[in-house]
Length: 529
Image 1: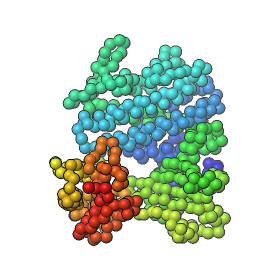
Image 2 (image 1 turned 45 degrees about the horizontal axis):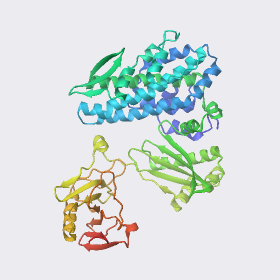
Image 3 (image 1 turned 90 degrees about the vertical axis):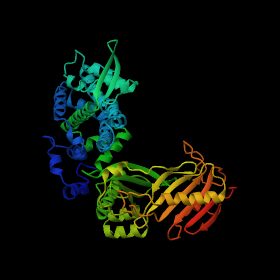
Image 4 (image 1 turned 135 degrees about the vertical axis):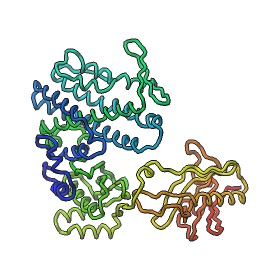
């Protein structure tokens, strides 16, 4: 596959997405297309776009001092360590998601620090920072022709800041104290109402370093932005050395790294290929399916179908897998239900041969029930509530506990599913009355709907409530089997305003004693005394 062979991605980025020209001009050198999706993240993502340009320039200055190493050797070192580059990007993206959560979390600064700030700092130091230093060390080893075995973060910092280094790594190694990282890793962190105290040993002396919660969060931003700037420098270095898709594809990369390269090649600015996997259909190695998973920016149905068909054709041409029967494209997004389209080899080969068009292909797919897709949910949502809202347990002391409450509502039906624990209640009539009381409690609580799917939600009463009933709740989820042989399992109950009782306990049918009372359908354990 040549650099410009994926014509539909070029067309998509030019006609269905914005910002391509800005991506192309991000560096003052020609940028191989394989890096467009990465660069777009550092232009548009909430946190990554704030990378510190001075650290980007520091990185370029360091790279310019690698001139004693031949270009081919520089390229070889970089490609041999491409997996480390990918690991840094993955860590930065993961941290970005958690920083977004940190900014939306509505709690005290101390709670934010315990749940978010400190764990994020620790991850950045252990992964992104450590891996970036490892990349610099690989090139320094080539300059000095002296392999190193610097395992710990502190050892890497000491090595790069050594007096004999002719390249100025000091700005890189001074980004953050390894002592703080060691304090976090070895239990040297305590909290007060306003501060975090880090305790560590330096030069045989115990040091206590204090930060206010706001100072700590500020240091997190500084570290993240600095590391992002250094990473952007490494992407520029890949471009300077012309490490394009052809070089990557034809090089001796590990399968794991090569898979990541192919995922990048199948991505656009805003549609990201998250996984490529080959599976045996029903365990039969003579019938295989290629699965591709994408995230997307809440595209409409027609756009997802078009992109799926094009991706299936491209991967069919590229993979050359034996016994391949179908390609399945799945999608996830923030405001769409998960969706998939499965395209058979007959459809793909007919499309390639131009014996059918996309419209005809879709008709066959629909006829064969090989598609599940729905429109994006365009209702106004409260993002903070969607992220953090849950349903608290309903506890009536000495009577019952409703726990693990789940909103399973549909567009025209408000539904709850939950577990009910009755404790010491043993008499069946008392159980029945208690179950009805629990349903009455649960059906009137407000539900909040779903950002991915438009469903009935609000303060109205639920149309349907489905409960699994147990004697006791166990910490580790033990004794949850819905079986007549489980002494902890009492039964199931379904409340339905319309008395249709749509939630069928298929696996248990015929194994429970059913009883209908008004709007309630009880299914009791046959061994219940």
